[in-house]
Amino acid sequence: MITIKLNGKNEKVKENFSLLKLLEEKNIIPETVVVALNMNVINQTDLHKSFLSDGDSVEILRFVAGG
Amino acid sequence: MQNFYERYKSHILLKEIGVKGQRRIKTSRVLIVGAGGLGSPLALYLAAAGVGNIGIIDFDNVDVSNLQRQILYNDNDIGKSKVEVAKERIEKLNPEIKVCAYNEKLTNANALEIFKNYDIVADAADNFQTRYLVNDACALSGIPDVWASAYKFEGQVSVFDAKKGACYRCFHPVAPKPGSVPSCGESGVIGGVTGIIGSIQACEVLKITTGAGAPLIGRLLYFDALNTLTKEFKIAKDKSCSLCGENPSITELQDYDEFCQINNFAENEITPDELNIKLKNEKNIQIISVYEESEKQDLVFSDSLPVALNNIVFLKDKLNANVETIFVCKYGYKSIYAIRLLKEAGYKGKTYSLKGGTDKY
Image (tube, rainbow over all chains, first blue to last red):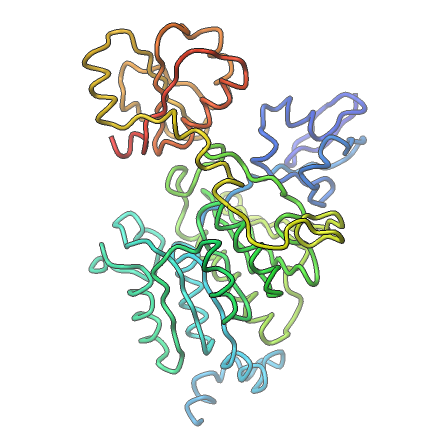
């Protein structure tokens, strides 16, 4: 297990865990969010190949169109 | 000219703007897409700042529920065309500017023609079809898209300038399915947030116009009013972006309703009248009230089963597939999305979504 920060809170995940897996585990539909890894927005189509390392910070924001 | 120096004294005093910058503002041409919560402060600040040519496009009329945040309008404006009221209001604020009101929907048929007359577009729309349309039309026209959105207590701002950095598609090439993301009308939004975010948008427009400072190109600013904090994220330009990458496949505007799958499940919809007839004639009907976990639940159909969108797939084994199921939600989008999720999970029973949602029932 490794420890990451998810929206500011510590969270333990398995090793070799991708951002897409993280969303699946949290029951989040990937197209409805913006995911940033260490403050860099990750392209929606790269979530499956972005793997988490110990100490990474992940921010999941709502992808919204409201105005 | 005397008036120019007096009126814009506070801008002219700023070394980043000065007389030169203010003259640029005077000759600049800015289009605001959407005259709602973000469009209101945007239009007011840009007019006050002396942006010489302002266009505003929106096809909506003022509704009483808009007044909590859409500060362009007052109680007497209810029912009137938003852009007509907006034009009158900002022309009064600054008689030196020219305002063009487009009381129509921005579409793939008119976007490029309208954008031709502007140097910058500020996207303050309220739906994904328009967001992708504005992004694409800006990139194809070679002008920046000063983008922002608001949701509950949160706001996001960025500048998508495909010539200099990332566009909307560089990080989010696939639009969310209808209903998967709630709108301001569904989820609620606090007025101050649209005010703050729309004002940041106005500032970005003036910065780009005058060349002052560093605009939010390749950066996403996130504001959380509930905890009063901001965060900034980098957005990298995607070399393989279908719009602004090295080998773009998008060279003209698309069908954005299709891209956002707006009409995919039209055949599953049922009107309020049809539903009433069904409820009268058939005893065996299951009604599911679909809601977002964070959303307040008001059960319009008291005998319906409330199910959170996240748990919809579990219905697959709970529902009786031999009985018709009606899905309802506030505006009729989430219910369509729920049916889609359920069918993807393999559910074979007959399903309907209440058209227009409980709001129109």
